[in-house]
Amino acid sequence: MTFLFAAFLILQTAAPSGSLSGTVILKDTAMQTPLASVRVELFGGPGLPLVVRTDSLGRFAFGNLPPGSYHLHVSKDSFIRQEFARRAAINIRPGEAHKPLL
Image (cartoon, rainbow, N blue to C red; front, side, top):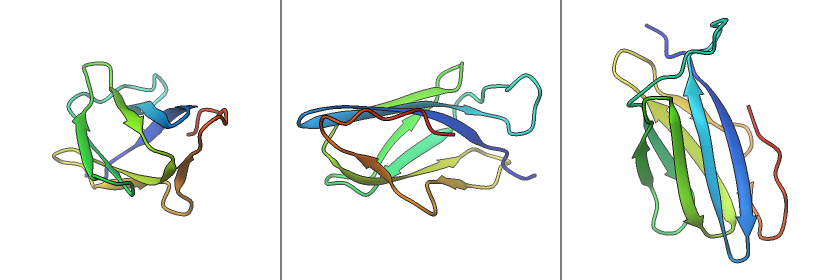
């Protein structure tokens, strides 16, 4: 079964750290069904990778991230592992507002 993935990410920064949060949902579903217990891995910064699991509403969050470039991988049993920001890294910069990413 193909891993259907979409993530809404909100990047917030405040010197000298930032945060990254979002929601994992089934792709191509009319109701945007959230996926619970998805493994979300953050790569790219010091002390990484960091790993969290989504809650019952598909939400995840990483806090106290130093400025830098990051990549996000998501995986769940019976789905194909997906990478968010494959073509371009997620950049966290102090003092810069970020729009939600899809």
